[in-house]
Length: 407
Image 1 (cartoon, rainbow, N blue to C red):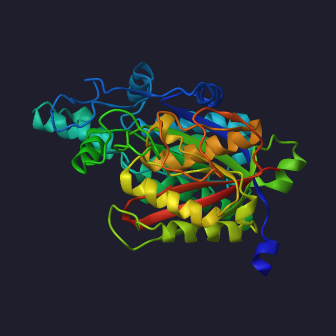
Image 2: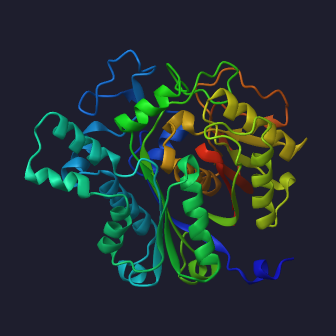
C-alpha cells in the first residue's frame, strides 16, 4: 500500500445543505426523491423570453420564482446569496459553532459554470435599452471571484479557498479538492460544493448545440432526446473522521477516494467507448482501496443525451462485469445543474447511504441496459448502500469520479 495513503486522514461528510428545483432544503429534497418528483417548469418571462422558435424546450428545472425574486433583491448575482443560505444549512446541520470554522480552521471549495453572468446580462440588457443608471454599476462589479470572497467574509473563514470551473465536472472536483485538503491535514474543515443558475446565456447555448430535450429528461432511455437544464446549490461540510467522532457529529458517509482527468478528445463529446470514464472510475476505486465488486450504487452523470449515456453505460459495464449494481441518474429529478451538478448528485448519494435508499431515474420507460445485473430503478428502492460512485463527465474532456462509503 502507498505510504501516502496510510498517512492520509479519513474524511467524512457531517453537514449538508441543498436547494434545488425539487426542494429548498435537505428534508424537502429527500421527500421529493422518494416521491419521484420532477422539478421542471416553464421559464417565466421575468427571467427571459423563450417564445422564439429557436428554443427546443421552453422549460427547465427552476427554483421557486418567489424565492428567486427574494434572492435577487438581496444579491444582484443571486448565486452568492443562494450559496450563503445553503452553506448556512450545511453548517447548522453539522452542529459546528460558527467560531469553530472561523480563521484558518476552515476553507471553501466552490464550483460554478455560468459564474455571475446573470447580473452581467441584466446590465447588458439595460445598456442596450438605454436604461442604465449609476446604481447599475454594481451589476458588473459582481465578478465570479467575489463569490468566495463574500462567503468567506460572511463566515470569517480564512483558510484555503478556490473556485472550480471545469464545466459539468466542477461540482465533483470541488468536493474532491476539499477532500484532499482535509485528508492531507491542510485544514480542519472544508465547505465544498457548487452553485449555478439558468441564464439566457446557458439556455441559448445548449439549445444551439441541439442537445436539449423537447420535453423531459429521460436518462438511459432508448428514446432519450437530450438534457433539460436545472439550477440550484449543494454544499457539504467535510472533516476528518477522528474530529467527527471526537465531537459526536452525525456522519452521512465517508469520502474514501477521488479521481479526475481530461480526455483530451473533443470539446463537447466524450470518447464513445467510455475508455476514459472507465479509467477515471478505476483510479477513484484504487485511491479508495476498493474493488469494483464492492460497489452497491452508481450515481451516473446520465445527461439523457445520446452519446453520453451510451458511453457511460459501456464504461459501467466494463467496470462491474457480472457484479450486480444499481445505477440511476438524478438529473431526471433536478435537471442538469451544470457547475452544481456534481455536488448535488454527491449529496443525493450521501443521503442515500445515510437513510438507506437508492434514488430513482424518473421519466425513463425503456432503459438501454439489457444486463440483469445492472439494476435501473424507476422508483426509489429502500436498500442499504456500502460503496457508491458519483460520476461527472463534462465539456472540454473534464471528468471526475468520487467514492462514498458507509461508515
